[in-house]
Each structure stands twice: as C-alpha cells, then as structure tokens.
Image (cartoon, rainbow, N blue to C red; front, top):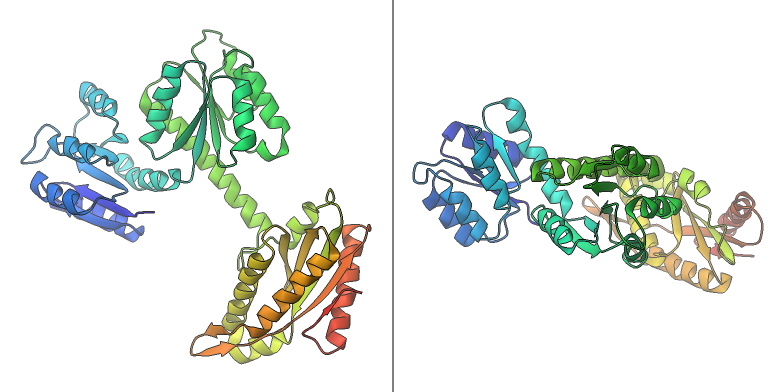
Amino acid sequence: MTNQVLVVEDSLTFRNYLGQLLTQAGYHVFTAQNIAEAQSILNTEPHLLCAVIDYCLPDGQDGEVIELALTYQHKVIVLTALFNPELRQRMLAKGVVDYLLKDNTASVSYILPLIQRLEKNKRHKCLVVDDSVTVRHHISQLLGHQYIATVQAENGQEALAALQVDPDITFVISDHDMPEKDGISMIREIRQHSNDTMMPILGLSGSDDPTLTAQFLKAGANDFLNKPFNPEEFYCRVHQILNMQEATNALYRMANQDSLTGLWNRRYLFNQALSDCEGRCIAMLDIDFFKSVNDTYGHDGGDAVLVRVAKILQLYFPDDLVARFGGEEFCIQACGSLNDFSTRLEHFRQRIEKTAIPYQNSTIHITMSIGVAASDDSLEKQIKLADDRLYLAKEHGRNRLVCR
C-alpha cells in the first residue's frame, strides 16, 4: 500500500505546514508550487495515495492542475480559500475526494484524518443493495473514488446470499423498497447471525415515510440517509460508520488479544470455547527455563522469544484457537484427531528446539514442554488435565510432549 502524497500549493508557509504534518504522520510527501512542478512529479510517481491541491495557482487560476491530476487517475483533495457553491458542485461532480476551505483551522485539521481514512478504505468492501442498477452504479462509483471496493445486489435475498459467500464484505449500504426482500427485513436477518452483528449498515430510501428512519435504526442499521443525497453528506456518513466499526474492533482487540504477541488472550479462550466441534483437544505449552532467559537477556529478550514462539504457533496451527495463557504459557484448542494434533505438536516442538532467535548481537535457544488432553469434559477440566500432563513433561526432563 502506497503512502505517497502530493501537495500542490503556491503558499510556501502552507505548503511547508502540510508537508511537515503529513511527514510526521508517516507519509512520503512530494511538494510542488505550480503546475509545471506538479506535472513533473505526476510523470514520475504513478503510485500516489492522493494529491492535496490548491485550486488556484499562479500558472493555473481555474483548477487546471486538478484536471491534470484526475487524468492520472489519482484521488484529489481540493483546497480553496473561498467558498463557491457552483465550484464546489463542479469539483465534486468530477469525482474529487473532498472540497476543503483553507480559511479556518478546523478545515485544515480535517486533511490528515481524511487521508488516513483513504488509506484505511483499501481494506474495505461494501455490499451495495438496490433494485435500481443506476443507483447501484452511482453509489459504487462514489465509493470507488474513496478506494472502497464494492459488490452489488439487486434485492435483500441476493444480498444475504452474497454475504454468505464473500467474507471480505465489511459493510452494507441498502435501499428499502426492493422485490423479494426489502431492506429492513434483510437487516433484521443480518443481525440475527452472530458473525454479522457488528457489520456497519447504512440505510437509504427515497420514500416520504417519516417513520422509515426509525424503522431502519430499530432493525439494526447504524445510520440512514434520504435519497437523493449530496456526495459530501454521503461520504461523511460512510466515514462515520467505518470509523465507528474500526474503533469497536480496536476495543475488541484490546480486550481479547495479547498486545505483545497478537495471540488471543485467556479471556477470549474461555469466551470462545470450541464446544461445537467434534473431538476437542487441548494443549498446554510452556517455555522451559524462561526465567533464565529473562535473567540473561533482560525482559526485552524474553519478549523477543515470546513473539517468535507466537509466530511459529500461528504457522503450525493456523486453523486452531491459539492463546497466550499467561507469562510464558500458551494454550491451543483444536478439533479432530488426537493423533493428528499430537503429531503437529511434536513437529512444532522440534521446530522450536532447532530455532535460533536473534536478539541484539546474540541468539537465544529455547525448548518447550507440552501437555495434551482430549476428553468430553468441560474446557476447564480439559485445561487442568493438559496442565497436569505439562508438569509431567517438566518432571521427566522437559522438552517433551505428554499426551497420556
């Protein structure tokens, strides 16, 4: 993903301000003060994230540089010193990302979040649901201007089918009045599925029914917008529901993931027990002599070991629930054959034994002891049994697996 941004601004002070602001935020910034310099950069840098462009330049008083950037298929944020409704409408109709004033701090401070939003939008795919092919294409085009991929459905039933087969869909924009299944009925059905309870949904309708907004929201939509709408309001609503989703996801990760290793934590392990799988197996794993690692290399060295172990665990057990249980102890929940699970664990143990973990000017070598349990008992009892077998592995010399 590119992080390159072009800033075209004839004011040296404002150009330097934007350049410094974006550079500090981690972007690679190209600056130009006129069309000629902008043309040179556009010719040599085809992978810009976006261009932030002043409408009026000394060698182009009527937005010529904006037209130039758009011909290169770049996303453009327009800056202007004066608000002109006709100009604003003309620029938005051309497909620019936004039209911002330079006359106040609030507008200028919106530039960085907007660029960050564009960058994040590349991770999203929207399901656009409307029985009008014209409306679907219009909405898809607007979202495309913001780097958001789309998939289309002409009614609620078709949309539900799309959600079943496309796990990359991250949010839904839906009309209400459609054949086969209307928007509100579709939303209710989406919310009944646990995997889709957090999916952002924006409702749309051109109906004059004053109760429709409340109906959409009560059915589970996150927001509602009347048709026809202007692009600015549409983008604001879309950005708002995506920002909310990302904030919610961040909180969820903070509550359920280990911040050091990225693995699930103990809380998630117990809340998401794989009780519906056949032949649940539990493994408890512990790094041998981990205290001596910390004593020798410090806690940063110990952290490096934990991170490397976590990555190898994810490599060997990609479809299982892998959690950091606490300290240097890990837990794996898997479904299926105990023999197959034990074989994978043994291969993992051997891999750890042979792994040299680089740290500063040295390498750290470790081993791991593993206890395994497979029974019809509760998760707590299975963990206790696996933990008992882990300590048997420790008592019998460490660096081994005990499953009986």
